Image (cartoon, rainbow, N blue to C red; front, side, top):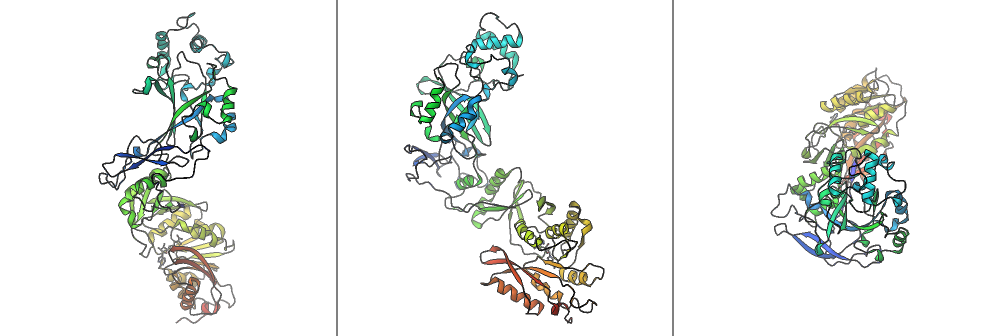
Length: 592
Ligand SMILES: C[S@@+](CC[C@H](N)C(=O)[O-])C[C@H]1O[C@@H](n2cnc3c(N)ncnc32)[C@H](O)[C@@H]1O
């Protein structure tokens, strides 16, 4: 499987560039653009008009972004915390029961950022179903917060402490202590969370801002920032306890579009105002309110290209693609990337876990006979033995010792489509068996061969793994000898299809077919095999050039060859597949 990212150059947002305005007619706001400078990793603020959506160039950063090319930073390390960005956005806090209906109604006004749900939970106010049955039937008719809690205590425990009078704070605290653990209510897990108020949350002007309600998943955290000027009982009771405030019940946050950040209700669009007015906001028992939220996006949130774009030097092309073989991501880094190879590998690993466990880079081009790759493990575990699935078949592969190329899976499918159930296939360069084993599922019988003993070992394992060992016979020979032996053996079934997938050299093996049928006592006119031979060509007319090589190899000119361009393996270099029926004159010629 090949994971593709489009080739792109890092986006640079020059200060004061005018970008398309946000979706609303509202004026684009100027917000700080965090950028990294080489001067000891300090954060400098530049200003830029912003485009819509989340960006590492927007929001507030608790830490300066340190680039690996900064002199003070090691090329192998970066701090994930530098990718934390905090955005202040507005949200409607609404009763959970009506939240879906409101979401549909306000869709065009809700936050529409990738991978961020526009509904967020506020864990502290969740009520279990069990608890709901104990609650008064209709929320609006409920008593105020204190009375509600006393009533609850009575319903749950019978006679409550201080029965007859509202519980004072000390008694209430005492009661809670018996029923809370660090997670919240021991029995009603979601009811509330016990935590101490965070220090230093005083805002300018003396207002206390309580950050409340937490949801962190996939690198996203939503917190409600509530302006709380009531008596500071939360210090005593825990910040999530709504002591002497309205009892809201279960609520949800509908995150509003970024253009409504820091707006007052009066400034919101009519659609939201109408909804708001339908719910009497002056009713202290109503859960409906406009709140400010802190939306924090962590390293986990950002995508591979966004992280690499920020880490790699300006103007450097971000690595665009990698191949996956089972749990291994296989990079093919350019020279310019090599000094950042560990960082690139770490990000690839982080962003593709758990499927990817190992990241490797090809060290050299394939040059050896067994077509194996020189790989360097850059991140993750060191094992290059993996299992992968192709065409609903499983293959064990040791990338250090055998050839495998997932990019050829489409080509293998194309080839298989030419085979029928009556075919007998001979795979001369079978590797670990992607063609041979897939063919065995469809055709009558397969003879599979490879020169590499390790590939043959895996080929045999894979036959068993796919329960096809009865339909495949495996050989470990040189291709030329194999062709001669398999066609000379009277006991083998007549071969109808021959696959020769060794693009660099396979055409040179075609002379093995010359005179192969001569003297075998076969009747002239019997079915001759169809040969599928692969090759590379850098010629201007690759089909013509490859055809020529085939003609020369078999010393015959007058036969039809069907050509197929498989893929460009390098600029100007095609991999081709030529298919033809072995010409009679070649098959029955006298052997020299
Ligand atoms: C390009 S790989 C193709 C493997 C398999 N068909 C696939 O698609 O994965 C070529 C295979 O030919 C094998 N090979 C190389 N020279 C050979 C030879 N002279 N005789 C037989 N096999 C050879 C290599 O070991 C390698 O597994």
